[in-house]
Length: 385
Image (cartoon, rainbow, N blue to C red):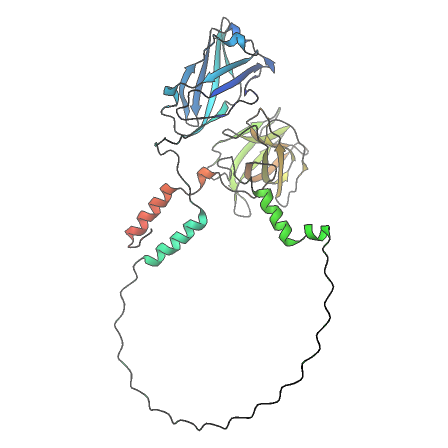
């Protein structure tokens, strides 16, 4: 029987370090039916991250009778959060009663985020620097690196003979001024129709800026698959033997090659953290043999049709606000019992507009990296302010 663990509608999905009053309201279901938790002898929240299990905390079960069936409230103890660096974490709930212990959810644990507070000085949050600023700083640093020794000055050559000065010719007389022409008629006032304005380059450029103003951040990590299948899992449907390997395509990009036979093959991201009350958009570049069945958040099926075997296409879907799912998934149905697919540049971002791929903010050059580069430049005899 499939057990699920979800955030109740409107509950936060993140908590700041040291905050013991932010309450997570969680919902336990079994086969999509709410679970009666009032018979539980104990409820334990077990917390982990990508490296494994970290610690656990007992849930106060005295007030369960006052809550909606299947729900319980969870506040972090200050000691629980004291040594947590900011980042993404997993949550499992173990419910013990007279029959034994049930673990929610049956599948991937629920994700939540720990964020830094203004007094946090652990250094876990590292400020990133803009790429253009980095390039400018590197160019400036390169100009300060010591050059080689200057060579000896050569001997001065002999001075040449002075040439004779030519005679100055006579100056010509100025010509007469011509008559002024008549003033031309004033032209008609131009007009711009609405269609012409909308299709103008300036308007289209402005529209693109508006579309991209609230989006663009990639919520996925290792979305360019540079580190094998870190944070990603291969997932198969019934009677399927799906396999996924990291390779390099004909464009020279790292990508995932998915093969298999049967009903369905695909991937899902094991670690996703985002505001489920906000509209999100998922997208990938894909080519090969198969029918793209789903890409984005949750388990809703969206059939995109058969894709090209010759060239990559950018495809995606938008998930409305209020989704209870935290699963980013990419799924294909077979064509003639075969799936042979290449995918790259996966992206999940806020908003309803799929923008060009970019890495997760945590994968961008940080101030720590910058300090190491600065030290190397200084060691070479340069300087970097």
